[in-house]
Image (cartoon, rainbow, N blue to C red; front, side, top):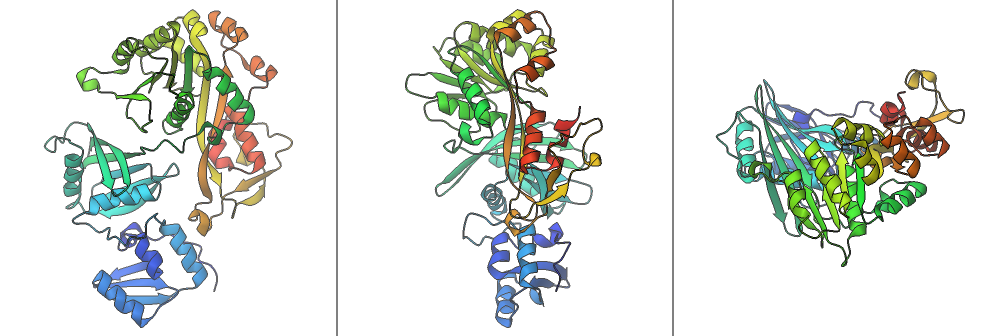
Length: 470
């Protein structure tokens, strides 16, 4: 029997069972009609049918499927969790807590609760991409929203304005925080949860994606006792993870490190971490002002959002402190332009900036199923000059090891520009054209690093396409 080509099952069917039940009983739901649930299974039997009838409380129909197809169905539609518990994820008592634990166990970074005209859906962000997990009726959705708002300490009567809160989930040895954001939309409140891991022990600069040369350059830049280290990139590009890995390296008994963050995503033993609270006046700029009276060696500012914060960061650097922060720009050198546009004098930027870093996250191709293809012109952006040694590419296929996505895990790619004496002159003269300097000094850009990943077959053209646009 040939392998199935369309392995996706509708969300409304998938939520009839959870992943533990799917793998334990080796079943895939394909139909629910007139009180009977129909499942595909490669081990159908009367005993299985009877047990499912008791567990699910419905009449059961089992349809034989090949073992190979079942393996692919399970991998595509259900992610295994890191627990052996069989938990019921249907609505009712405990549904919300079980959903949160399920998302954490399968490695989701965000959970989206979204209301629409006829139904509401729940999506998990897995490896940077959203995947629909549940469909909720319009009648049940307000109940779940209120449960979330109560847990997060939000006002359940306020439905017209956005609100932000935080939930701490504790279960046995597992404890993690969740940032909650509500947003009024046309059909109700959209809730987004960001899962924040408290454990920073696994974060290490060596494993984030730096090349050996980039890591050496970056390490030298953060050894300076004063100055500014800026990391740029869009939301979700891993900037905060890079900052925490840096703090972990700098953290020792001789160093006083203070951070102001929104939110605090990891906790680091030995680091004084402050949560931003703008509603009571504790913003980045005011916190920085206070930090300077706390005898710090290293200061981490979650993000430079405005000229006031930028000025305070520069003041801190000028008075002998090492300042780490993030900023939203498209490239490492564009950070300079952004600071100048904010009104920061060029000579202050030149005298305080140690290094400018840009980064992106790309998904890595699954080594078990990626396939080699010929590189053709129409695969690349217009005007892109395909390197002579880039004759072959690899594309995602999908197998049970990668849940039929074609990808496994992600890695960061970097663009690191240390501010040398030559660049100080460029900045002071407001001469921001440094293409020749980058080429002459063999500095790897996001684009050149993306091409390198393509050559090595680590990622696909789809993942780095935007970085190749001229």
